Length: 90
Ligand SMILES: [Zn+2]
Image 1: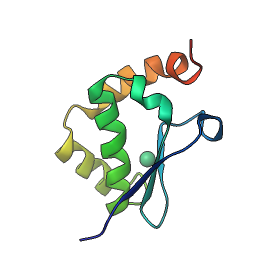
Image 2: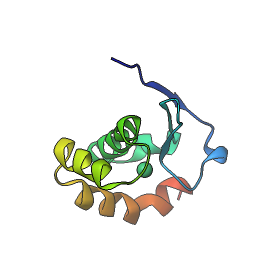
Image 3: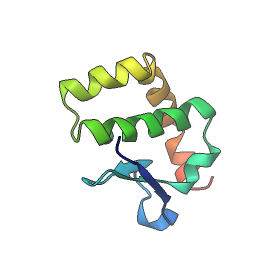
């Protein structure tokens, strides 16, 4: 089993996204994410963790995503709607 490394970046480095996953499987999360509702945080974590298995947004990636969080599209929509306020500290 491989290990996922998670680290939190300074907000200024990644204002436009919630998280990312490097080719080595290192996950980076936006610290502003802590202000988001729990299911939105879960969504970002699961999205990045799925990238450990599937490095792109392929059919396989979305299949995996649906397995771990069937309602992910609704959660993403909610998070996207709030993103501006969280990321810009309003
Ligand atoms: Zn992605």
